[in-house]
Each structure stands twice: as structure tokens, then as C-alpha cells.
Amino acid sequence: GRGMRRALLAVPFVGKDCPSVASEFAHPDVAIGLTLLAYRREGLRHRDFLLLLRLLRAEMDEERGPHSRRPACLRWVAWVREAGGRVRGFSWSGRPLADLSRDEARADAPPPAPEPGLGACAAAPEGLEELRGSVWPLERVSARDEQQSAALWLLLRRACGAVRHYLDEHVFPSVLGLSDSLLSCSAQELGSGVLFGRRLGFSGTPSEVLPASMGEVHYERGCDARILGALLSPAVVTRVETLPADWGPEWLLRRVAGGEFHALIDAGAAVVGLSNGEAARALLARLPPGPFAGVAFLSPADECVVLLRDGRTVPLAQCGLAPEQRFTFYDHVHTTGLDVLQAPTARAALTLGKDTMWRDYAQAAFRMRNLGPQAQTLQLFAPPEVAFLVSRSGRQGPAEAAGTPAAAASAPAPGPAPGGGSPEGLPDLISLGPAASEAPAVPLDL
Image (cartoon, rainbow, N blue to C red; front, side, top):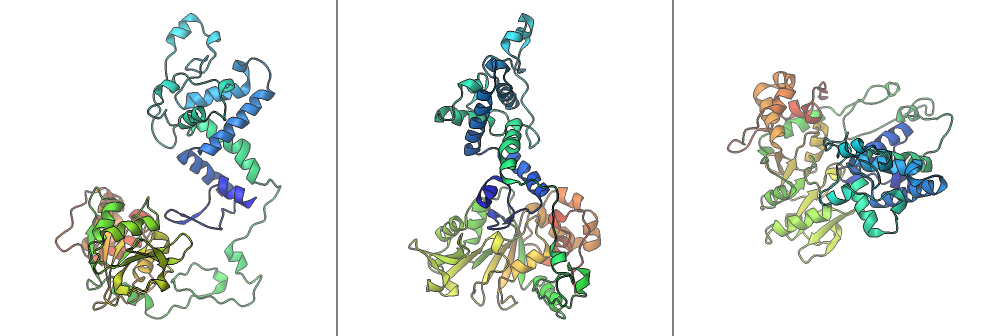
């Protein structure tokens, strides 16, 4: 069913640490490819490995002949070898010891450690060296033995052959239907004149990525220019602060909880490894207790809630706190489409990342609905390499900065100048795309 499909196959993510609730990869080739990558990167889960053991033992029981010759047992030997181990009764090369001559037995030695990386099978984890040299043969393995199966899982969870066998023999046949043909259509066909004679659309995000049959996009006159003017004003975006080389999510949360900010807008997905609730607790523990009585954030149910000083989490509408009394954490997924009333002169910290696009930056910045020189303001936080590209772009101009993005990215990043960097290089840099790559810039619609 659908639940089994989502449990076994790769699913789309709408942002950092946030899988889509309902969406799935529609094209089977995409689902298969991304599932292979996901399992190769993360390895088999413990429950996956236990099921794989049962499947392989069932294959072995159906086969005939000595265990050392059965295909299932030889497959087990191959998986152990891929993980850098040796099965009892077999050589390091995977041959039964009974088949080796005396000279071959003396020359038998462990293989060199595999190179690290996604394309190589992982070596045995630390603490499993004794098991690595003498792994139980398949006929001596039981999925019901928790201690044995846990040790084998640590050894074999990333073995290439084990992952591929589990996917080919269980996952894909279970959740992917087979058919002679595939009928598919895109949003362009659904919005075409084949179905509807007249089509109207409205979007708050300026874009011309529409079917040609829908005609020309009509923009609100001067809208983009007003947004660009606000985000390039030093009175609004007052500083670009470079994060230290050893920065992490905890460092960033400590920095923004000093009392000068009322919001953290994580457009750069800098707060990783923490749930929204955990980030809110870390912020509240560091925020000065006088001005701040709570932290607003989005719950897993997409409800805006406030964590109070007494440990309670209540809906925003019931917290009883004025905007000046609460700090707001906008996680990466909710830097667009979320409106939380802020104090008239609130100041927000906004993170940039290597994948931040100009549109995403503008959308995130205007979570502060009253941006202006005498109103709400922003301070940007960027990793050293991104901050250097911003400052380089501002000094050189768009043509020169965009011409050598690779050189700029590899150059050493200077420390922040007194007072911080200037935001004037942002549109030239961020409009280039993720990591200021060599992809052509997309011009702004002014």
C-alpha cells in the first residue's frame, strides 16, 4: 500500500529535515534512482537487515548440497568480503578453505581497506575487528539472536551487495507495479487549453515559468524595484556578518540570542540536526529573561506555537505575549508563507547558504512585513565562503564577479571588516544560483 511505499522508497523533501507529507516521486525511474542513492548513503536500517537475513536464510533452506556450495551462502560470503570481513571456513578471497592448496592458504591475507566515499563499501566499524576476521557462516546466523544480528548489522549495513539484493528482491517488487506502458502528464498539460478555455492565475512570486499558451505575465509596476531597493539599503540590511570557520548550529543560536534580535530566519538551512522544538528550547535558555518570555516556532503539525519560560508549549493565539516579548524562529521550510506579527522596530537575523537564490532570500526577508529604515531591519549571517563572494561581488561589480565564481569560492575568506560587510553585492551573487555556480545568471524582472 501507500504507507509501505513511503516507508521503503525515497520521498521528496520540502526543505531541511522536512519530508513531504503526501507527495511522492511520480516517475518510477526517479523513485528507483533516488532510493538507490538513499540506501547507499544511509545504509540498511536495522529492521531492513533483519528482513534481509530472513529472506536469505529462506533461500538457503530451499537449496540443496553442502552449505559452502549453496548460492545463498556464497552470496553471504560475498557481502562479508565487501565489508572487509571473512566468513569462517572461507579464505579472505571468498573461496572455501578446503579448496585451497597449502601455498594458497599461506598467502591468504586480508584485503586493503576500501577508500572512503559513497562509491565504496564501508569498512568494518571500530570495535568489530574481531568479528571482521571470523564472521559466522549463514547457516549459523539467526535473526532471533539480538546480539548476533546487531553486530552483523553494524558490519554489513553498508555492504553494496546486501543493499542491492534487498532492493531488487524485496523493496522494488513489493511497491513498484509493472506495466507495459506509462501514462503521464505535467502541470503544463493540465493547465493547457485542452482542458480549459480561459485560464487566470495569480502569484505573489514574480516568475515567467509558465506555459507559452497562457500568454504574457503582467507584473505589478515597480514591485520588484521596491523589493530590491529595500534589500540593498544599508539602513534596512545593516550588516553581513561572517560566521567563524568552526561555526555550528549551537554557535549561531548563541549569537542570535544575545538580545539584539527578535527573530531568526533560517533561509540558509544553518540550523541542522535540531528539531524546531529543540532549537526553540536552546534559544529560550540563552535569551535574556527580561525582554523575552517565549519563543515562537512551527510545530510538526504546522501549527504556530510558543514555548514559554515555564516549559509549556501553547498556540500563538493563546500565549498572551506581545510581539516585543517573544522571539520567532523561522525554520528553513517556513521562511516562505508564514506570517507572524513582529514588533514595529524588530530586528531579525537571516542566514544565507550556498544554495540560497535571490527569490528565496527576498521571500525570507519579507517575513518582516514592516521592513524600512525607521522600522524593522535585518542582519545577514553567511558562512565564510559565501560572505567572501558577497563582498567580492560588491567590490568588483556583477560582470567581473560572475566571471570567476570558482576562483572566488576557492579563495581564502577574510574576516569581517569592522561594522560588517555591505549587502550591495547580494543580487549579483545570489541570482547566479546555488553556490554561485557557473550556471548563467537569471535576470531580475524590474
